[in-house]
Length: 390
Image (cartoon, rainbow, N blue to C red; front, side):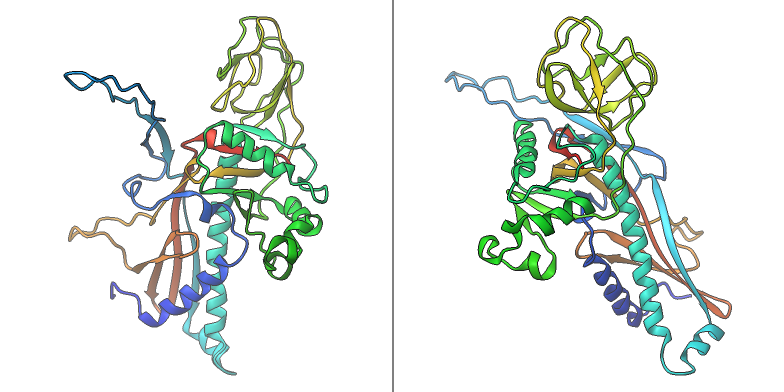
């Protein structure tokens, strides 16, 4: 069959994609995206990407020769393409004919099927990004079990998130805050400074439900964010070694139950809420997300408490989260080219920047359309991510 897709199909496909993009998609448009560097990564294969450390300033000392400095130790992250998914739509000639018997009703139905296909894949990407984001967050603010922004005229939840990112050295722009449905309900219903046109300077929230930017954060809404159930750990204490500011590995002695990745923990004498990067199921060593302790732990057994279950909201600078995508892999044919029996074309969503694979398979008395995407997520800079509990 032909290796090109008829132009007449492309326009309704893009129309379907744009209509989905206008819905509530929070993480995908806000994160750093890589649509090419991981193209050679097979499903489940680990690929290493390098990160550049912060620069150090030194005194300028005039001399005969230039100083022998400038070397840097690059950091790295490991990322896997963990998902390769497709949504398939198939019709045979009799089915199309039956729909068109009373008029051309098949094209609108096909367009809606494409909409549902793109929506399904985008929602899966959003869910993966949400999990990666809350588990990689550096620290947390807010109250678990209570949706933020619940007090009219009080925007201190924004300020607390900005404080964490500022202290961690996260870039000021671009920053995003992706909120769940409870937080968005409070923003829409209680924060009049955002929806009163004379105070907000725009009627976007009042008329169209768009929050826009608040205190340096571009606000995104992801209704699919899931509640997080805390670990069962209780009565844990640190050992008596003592831990300096910046420490991330903390040894726990007495205590029982699980400390899970993404749990929010506090230590006696320290009000900071830390996010667990690696946990335990019995006494052992946990690891906190970077940049680690803000307050030193004394050289004595110090109680650790796991916070309550929560529904996350996440703030981050764009370099904090990474979404790597590629086309689902096609086999190498006998002539050395890649392909299969279908025609394939890349469809790029202008809103999220995600490139999907559109496949068309002309079969015996029937036709099948396939929307495909392979992707993985990572957090190259956890210190540039903050968790707002809800």
